[in-house]
Image 1 (cartoon, rainbow, N blue to C red):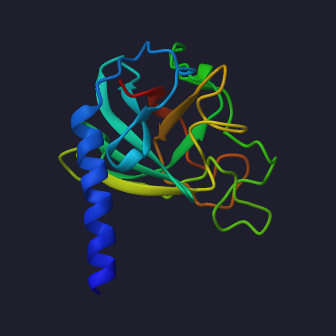
Image 2: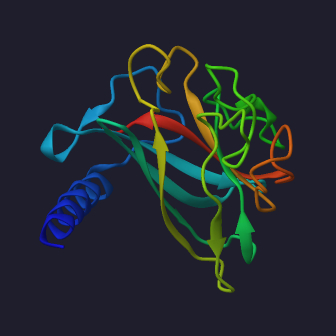
Image 3: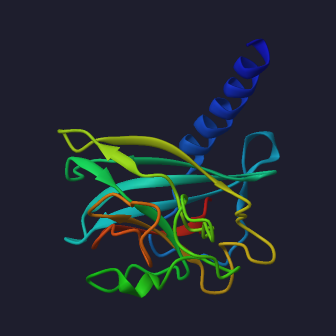
Length: 190
């Protein structure tokens, strides 16, 4: 129990420092180097917008030795479960967020955490919005990195997308998660 508490406190301290230090704007160059965070961890941020182009929340991505820890905070989300995916292109320009491209999937795997031929690196657990529209979630993307070969912060960047429905983690190509209701360009934190 004591080891888990130390690990939890270390992660919490790193994320707290990252949340305080982050301030990247939507137009930041995604190919820039990720910032060194507390404890030498690399981190990036995505400022999410909704389809009305209003601030929707943010995601903090901390690059650890085995993948990314992603903290998501949203306000004004429709109540209920929502699928969340990492997307290939760092763009939220189009009205329906299709400019973010398809799922981040360098290994060409099938969609779904429950799929025997998956999951794609883009596949994340669902998040839940309470009746007041608030979301506070922490997800893990194993094997995904910010920098280097196959990293999210490549030449055209990457985005994080929130969908209108929950992901069933099996159905192709997006788990039946429906329209894209939120988008954030993943950018190096300052």
